[in-house]
Image (cartoon, rainbow, N blue to C red):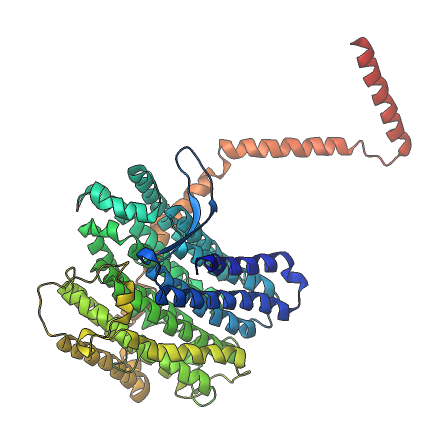
Length: 629
């Protein structure tokens, strides 16, 4: 088993390198074989490794494989070491399995694109970077993968770079996530200064002995790591890049939102949970940020016109649930929701991509409609994904993963009534915007004619993902549903069990309330968007309602605030400073070089006699100087 571990990230990397070097020389069929095949084989290796890991657990419940020493400076000697435990096993399963399905879908979706090989090269590099991030034995190697996914997101969000808006979205994502990455880097410097190592296990074992609970240094370090996680996972206040990231192709959106980049922050906080437990203030900050984010993003999703932007805000909101769970100490619940969310969100993005392509690249839900019978496979799979996203009681996976978070936001030791109310409100809003999206896209009158229907390369991944979005939740049932806790038992050696508070309130009551709220959100959207749409039109005639609607549509004005307070002042100062002394030095060097070039160009007359004479005169001068010396 340990001998196969290195193959998991190596296969996507080899595929990426081959496509970068010779991809343009190969037919599209061979490009797809390399791109899809390398990820699929990696997924198979993960399944084999996971089976071996679970059937014959290694000593200590962890497996390491050192490939080589990265570099050595004084006593600092970071290694390229891969580390596998139950937490990283869950992540590499999601990354490779869902990544393989997205790649298969992409082979059909991107078939007519002129940059076919560049697309798969970037996608493979993306998967490789995320695998390195979650398999890293030390924080330096983790940071390499961390920055790798940031680079690949820039390349893929701006894949269709001919459009200025796409390039802007890519730069926005790159710059905003760099803010969090810088804070995280400072946190890593503090950890190295304090512990003399960046080994994850070494830090987690030593931290409780070095730092008392509530110490200022623990709080500062945890908050810096949180800033890095908030940037990558698009949480307040660094969430504004993700809706614009929809500029990339739909498979890119699915990969970013479901299996790779935006889940990196969840992994970081779960992996470094000991640091956060040493700072109750920082851990509560994680919960507050998650609760506020899920609430704010839900209202924005409720007003969007672009189907992919609805799903983008939905991702921000669902990651908020994961942060909330991490903040109250419900680690296994957060990771469980991560896995279930990966299935249904990949399904929704890929199904949305199929709709967009079938309708001549139309993104607005208000120009869709009537697709229920025209695209039956897409309709039914999208419906399953929506049921899971809305946490439809009992029959969807999303119910079982989200129900845990709602319960623990109240009952866990770090839970709070306000957090529970925000989480419950988010569940209502989620059910409403999900139903709205479903009705506008598939019911009503057909507003855009179908160009062509998706082929099997695109529909087969949808069916597979729909199966998991429907049934994967049954591997972890609530305590009052028979206490079948296969998933949390798997994670128990790595993550601590959720500590409950003093409340003995019956869990059935909370489940009934959550189910009622979800059904209420579905009913409200059904009423306003299907039964009585004119009522909503009457509401829109109100000036106050329109102002609130536009406020939510703009993402609560965060972009405008940042543009006013940061972007415009920086651009203004840069324009003032564009001709400073440094620039004048560079301009002088450039001007001097240009002048010398033009002067020397006069010697190029094209006359052979002048060239021969120049050689003779030069030879005479050289001989004369040598004789004189």
